[in-house]
Length: 247
Image 1 (spheres, rainbow, N blue to C red):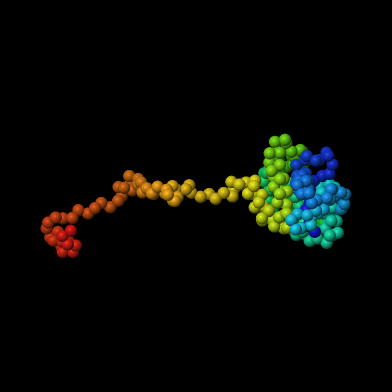
Image 2 (cartoon, rainbow, N blue to C red):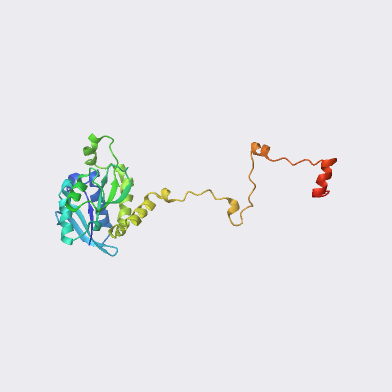
């Protein structure tokens, strides 16, 4: 069994909050894969069992509110006798711009109360999918910002992000984090993966015109060695003729 957890706060009041991006991503995985069962209450949260690729997977949305997420996650981990590497947590990241993501294993909680709680219950060595929501610019504004709803315009990047997470969730379940991150990057930031090569020269294409010699600046031309003037008569002329012939 593999465990994929989305973090957020339960209830309609919080459904559209930036803090609930983990819930939203998990809902899209559930919606996109017909192998998952309907949501039901268990482990102090909402769970759904199913398959992603060859792995049996439990999706979990803790109902304990963000600050106590570890209670729900710890209970599920103990029941299935899972190790930290069997767990992937999806959550909001203030230190990443909107639409950006990062995969990470282990580390600190970075001030995120959901991670703080999970680490307190099972240790820090689990895998994390950090989903950027941006920062309001002032620490005093953070609470209202994360508990505020996404703007309608945010759907332009949220929808493709959730689509790609769901599409490649089998790699996430299998622990193939690098491959998973590469797939998302290819789809969401293709300009980063394009090879920045030189423009193709027509002379290098089959059947292309012959390459033209490169022009030189007037400075370089002025520096070219000038042909030596050979003396036509006198001792020097006689000596050179002996060495090189009459030509």
